[in-house]
Length: 123
Image 1 (spheres, one colour):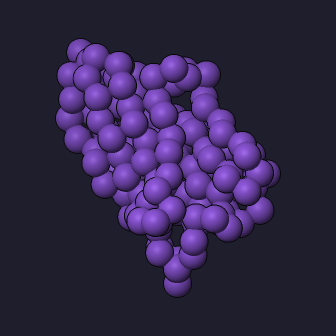
Image 2 (cartoon, one colour):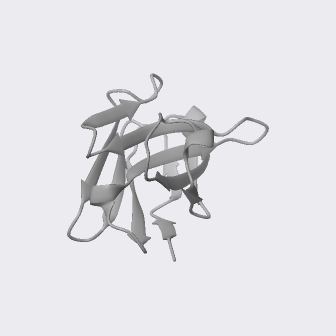
Image 3 (cartoon, rainbow, N blue to C red):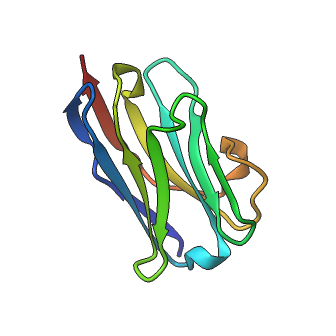
């Protein structure tokens, strides 16, 4: 059974940092693309960053480029999202997602989802 469990969310002041973790089970990261998505209140879910090791692809949403970094530890089957210089507009529930055939960092392109972790950035 594929499972994705996010952790690391919380409350942080603007300019601060958080590192989100996505622990995967039921599959190996070598075979799947992993993405971080977020959904703010009243807004659609959007792709923040995705990584497909098999395709050599890393994607970042323009609004987070230069501030967020996605990485993976295949030995731990865990993907991380390091978020620096956080802004109030980064406030959202952050979800981890996975797919075996990567078509892009888009919600409809993902097959498996975690339950999300809340990130709140205060001004």
